[in-house]
Amino acid sequence: MERIPILRMGQFLLVTIQVDMHDRLAVQLQDDLTEKISEWSSRGVLIDISTLEIVDSFIGRMLANIAAMARVLDAETVVVGMQPAVAITLVELGMSLAGVRTALNVETGMELLYELRGDFHSEMGG
Amino acid sequence: MKSVKQETVLLTTSGDVVVARQKVRQWAMEMKFTLVDQTKLVTAASELARNALDHGKGGQMVIEHVENSIRNGLKLVFEDRGPGIPDIEAALRDGFTTAGGMGLGLGGSKRLVNDFQIESEPGKGTRITVVRWK
Amino acid sequence: MSKLPEMISKHQEAIRADWLKQMSGAVRRADLMSNEEIDSQSRELLTTIASGAKSGGITNLDGPAWTPAREALAAISASRAKQGFTTSETAIFVLSLKQPLFAMVRKELAASPDAVFDEIWKATLLLDNLALITADAFQTTREKFIARQQEELMELSTPVVKLWDGILALPIIGTLDSARTQVVMESLLQAVVQTNSRFAIIDITGVPTVDTLVAQHLLKTITAARLMGAECIISGVRPQIAQTIVHLGIDLANVITKAKLADAFALALQRTGKTVVAMDSGNAKKTLFKKEE
Image 1 (tube, rainbow over the protein chains, first blue to last red):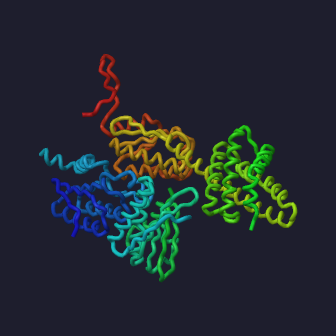
Image 2 (cartoon, rainbow over the protein chains, first blue to last red; image 1 turned 90 degrees about the vertical axis):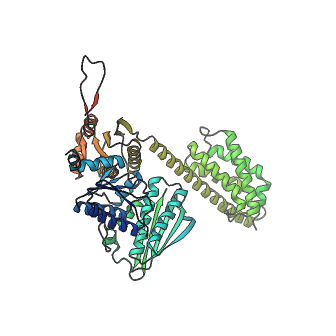
């Protein structure tokens, strides 16, 4: 079965959504991510949606769910790269993804994750 | 409202929702809708196609290029043979849900288009017609 | 079978001369168009009507035989709509053809009063139909004209300016309606992506009033920017607007607002780790803005 790949970068997970997702694939991603967070004790998840052409209420709900589930597993979630047209439409649809953190691109998203998990630096510094 | 051309997409599996989105995108691009308008149309189509599939046990979507005296529009008609919607007003309210979702499907898609019309007969099915004008 | 088509063809020049005389009394607008223009328009129209009537009959004007006449009418209406004629002045141009046509019918069929009445009735129907086509075309031209002007107005709408690396400003001047807000919102969010800006300042000093709808649009823009990973700051909120916002019960609790654009800019600088320091009097190197290390 088709799957969205999850990359492991140290204590963070990186997911790039590049396909026009059908609903089963989205549910699969949700399952895979929670499993990996738990398996690798990840502290953060970065989801890049910059190539996604729409986010409807189903995908919006999936993003909110992932953030909520990750939070329970002690990991932060940052969604990056949402396109203006997608953001305008999502707001009009009535979704604000209140529990989800966002950043403009992967770079600022990673900075935000490091900022949120300040303990990483102290661990490295001794 | 005059019809210029139309096409039908069957909605029987969740993969068909993806096909419906792609078709609407293609038509909206051909009609030169702005990127934001395209996105709104495709998102509304995604919501309503999924609605027809999840609640209406499948059906079809008809895409139509329409025009009146001064404007062009893209009209989408979703038809299903499901149980119908007993209380349309309630179904349009944000937060209304029967499938355990966020209940933004119908009310949300209404805000993404210019014209929105629901006809439903309990036991027979539902027809939702939306138009976005350029 | 009507004799009208044949009569129009035969007496075309006479009818036209009479028509021009009619118009000089009733609907000539010497201020808006020249004699030559009227001359050529009337000639073209009468020729196309004559040929349309001859090959297409006078009851149904939808067929291909009447296409040249319909197009001529549309062109005349369009040019008049642009020149500033009123709808009735444009319709009368066509309707003033009635009198010359009736006169001609009466003269030609003088021997048979019944036939005169019959043909005049048919001529009336024909001209009424032509007048309706004219009015429709006139209206369409006006509507397209208005739509285009609206689009042009939109385009000069509102520029997004870059204040500093990662900080944009959008000074809004004039009343915000939903169409304009949509354009403004799109260009702001587009600029956020293009310039990779984490902060966008929306300055509403130049906005005369804020009603519920405008406030909702602003809130939507702010929410959309947040979804993209950028933060909006509203500045230039005048005292009476602050009062209105509270009276309308609009919740701006989650929105950063500042009185002046300068305050908003300072806040954005601070949030991006920069600060404004005074110049050292003896220092020739002007370091106005210094990044915090």
